[in-house]
Image 1 (cartoon, rainbow, N blue to C red):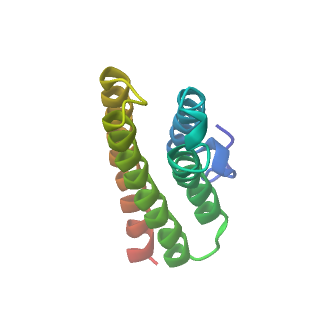
Image 2: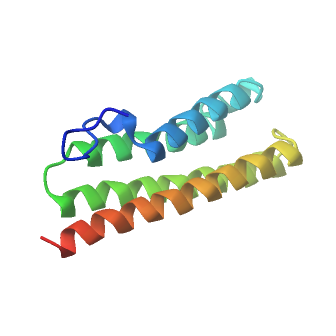
Length: 130
């Protein structure tokens, strides 16, 4: 990781939580390639947008100056994460994603949610210490 002399991370792409979100969005893109063509403007588009929104909101929040502003984007990332989980269920129920893959993805998003919550908590602590 690239860190400042004071130990701070200088770039969003060095955050573990961003790396995990980015990797999962790549998985979502690859899995949804097999979805039916009729869904390209339906569930395929929706789950892809939600998945990329997680890492995008983390990146945008990181780029904000004030801690309270950062938190807003991290909360948005958490909301998008839940949206992805919703579409995983939906894709499974429609038969577009097999149950094993759906459960694995859902679990990885659960793990990411825990990591994101810890990350948010660390920013909240910084707010309290200011």
